[in-house]
Image 1 (cartoon, helix red, strand yellow):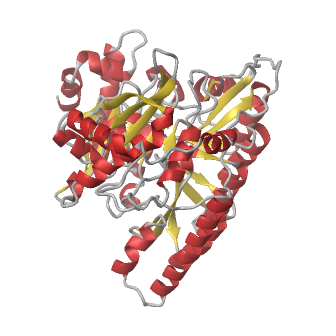
Image 2 (tube, rainbow, N blue to C red):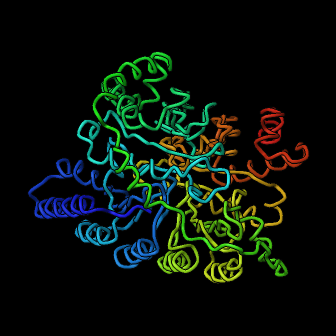
Image 3 (tube, helix red, strand yellow):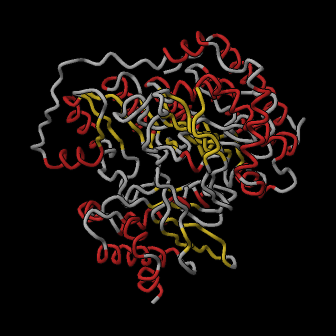
Length: 544
């Protein structure tokens, strides 16, 4: 994984001391909240319903055991002994004292971490595939390119005050585990007919108030033009993006209003200029970055045999373990979704355990996923049983990956000042209703996602079943949507009818699942059946 050089460390250390001075001035009353707000947001500090929330960046979801231990230390020392892993591969702490924030950032800096650009109208944390560098179907590890984007975008003087926040994802294979078509810019490494590797460029996707799927702006972008083309894409947006209307400020609105063809034309025109500026990294610099992502020293001659005699272990193997590109190794998915637990939450003890396992069994590497789980990317199959035993003892071995119990949920009205409804209690009720793991496995892949407001931090638009919390005359109400997907078959979920109370939406989901089990054909997922039969049978069952 990438390691800071002297410039990275100097930048982060200087930012910490700058923010310490700003916090001291705020606490001394020398600065108003209106003056302080843009400064704290630049450092990932939000003021929520009950306390400050700090969002810490985990670039492309990759971190070391030492960094994971630091996250546990912060949870234990400065929060209420837990952290919340997010759908952007970050971690949030919900109970931060303002006076502690500079010390937290200083401690993060000692392990090459920060909270820079995790908020504000700038380029946010670059995200990627949680299996990057380990997946068998990968054309190329996308993380060196994500790291290059991180370095290019951090404190970029032209893009520090964009019309609105900006999110970029990079993947290295045809299977999309990072929802690239639902990003402001999505990048997919692939090979052209000549066998050259470059990028398919999607621009103008997003969720929120107006969900849109990004069109392809460039089918093949040569690696040599990578940053010059990104610069052109951002310049066109920065020049013409709406600044007069918060709800129409995202790049998806610009691309939609002027059309993909016109946006493409303007980018290509701008690209003729940016490609002459020498923006792309010299080969030696990119080689330096790429070398930090070199594959681990895998052992050879390892057996692929696994003793499956323990039925609970065998069940976990089938659900939580993914194929690795190297014989004798596997990818372990750690569930942060225990039945009736809080999706994405982990205690300091659990975070420490995952750090220990990463250090001992995964070449000192862990990943955070878009689904609020954690991955050990490089595990010897011979170690899987030992790992499972330790995870099971810590409540981290629920075998529910991609099942209805693997719910994505934002913090909702329990914490967030923007939310209209609670997400966490609803997620817990749904998980309780479908607690039977045998039933979950029979239902198969069924991705359920909950957002407490239209900002869609729970990605409800991309759920096979999506739930949006709204305010209905002062009461919490929940809209139900079907048919969304964030994968390579990207689609936006469709609202099926009037909303429900908290208990009512749980009942409605159970009725929808019953319709699915009645109508599904062999091998069909929930979304496949829904796409084949349409709304009508689901509406009939739910609304009568």
